[in-house]
Length: 224
Image (cartoon, rainbow, N blue to C red; front, side, top):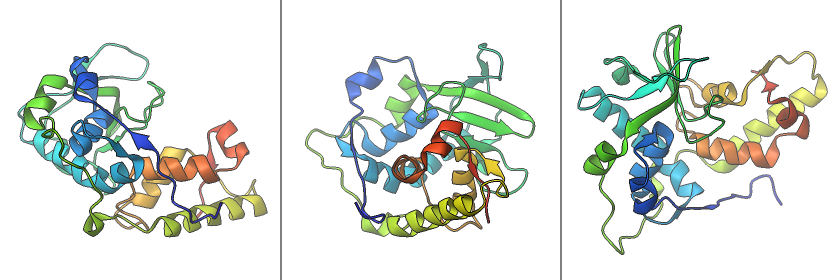
C-alpha cells in the first residue's frame, strides 16, 4: 500500500445508541453533530470534525447547559467552569484545550479539558441537550463529504508524519519524545502545518504508519 493511500473505515452512531445513554462524552457529541444518526465513515468524520467541534464550543459558550468531568485521580464528577469555551483550542499559550483522546478513560472519542493547571477527564454532556439541539437527521437524508471543507490533502499529512519517523530512526536518542496527543496538537496548532487536522484523521495515520516501538511505548518524537 502506498504511503499516500487514503484509509477510511465505516462509522455508525445511531439514534438508539445515543438515546440509550444519559450522557455523551464530548468526542461522541462531536461525532453525533457530524452524522446525526446517518451511516458515515472516518474520512467524513475527519472532514467535519473542526466545524462540528466549533459548533459545540459556541453552544457551550452561550451558557445554555453545563458539562461535567472529574479531576485526575478522582472519579467525582463536577461542573466545569463557564467562560472557557470561547477560547477553547484557539492555540494561544494560555487558552484552554480540549482533546477527545482521554488517557483516563482509555478512549479516543471521550473528552479531556485543560484550563491552566486544572484538568478534567471524562468530560460529558447530557444526551437530552444534544438531541434537542442537534436532532436526528430526517430518514433517507444522505451524508457526504463536502469538498470545500476538506482540511488537508492526506498525503501531505502522511509525508509530514513519515519525516518524523525517519528523523527518529536516524537518531532516536537525540529526538525527545512526546505523546501522540501532543504531536497531533503541534500539527493542528494555528501556526502549525495542518491547523484543520482532526484527531480521527491523525489516529488513522498513526495506526498505519507509526513504528511498533512508538506504539509500544506510547510516545513519539518531538522534532521540528
